[in-house]
Image 1: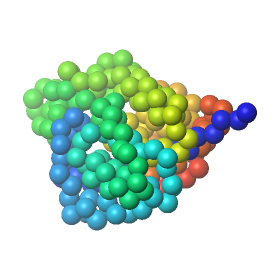
Image 2: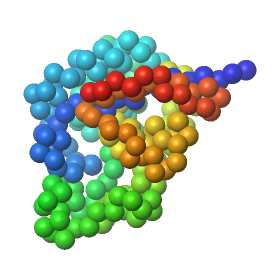
Image 3: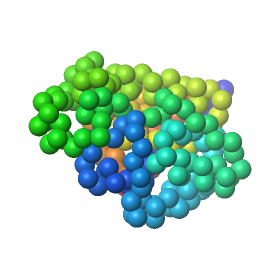
Length: 195
């Protein structure tokens, strides 16, 4: 019997940190006016997808969409820490320029070194994204996942069977949506909507 799963990946709406270029992974960042305008569109995308499960990062910028979508479709929301953004360690809350001024090095190319000291590596975020996707797919067949850019990229790499370097192959904007169809473990990108 063929097993098919559909996954709708949703990146959170625009935040003040996105506009000012601050690295905010684990912290909270308020939505901008544009971000607030993007919420109903993203909720509508999730509702049209007709999920049987909605999973979300616990951060406010994702919950703004996920909680409303879950209420609208009448589903219990699954909140999972593993869907939180990449941990930027010592660079958290800083702009790239501020991090450089403080001597904080960035490592985007090495798979196993933290992106910034005290944070996570690409392999770390891929590992936890893989775990949460496996858990979600084991219990549901149409899953909306409301998350962050790093987890979104990681999910595409995992679901489409791409090499780990593929994590940087996608320009994931705020309010971006991607639908992936997985048939017997083979992922296919069905649609990719710019935010």
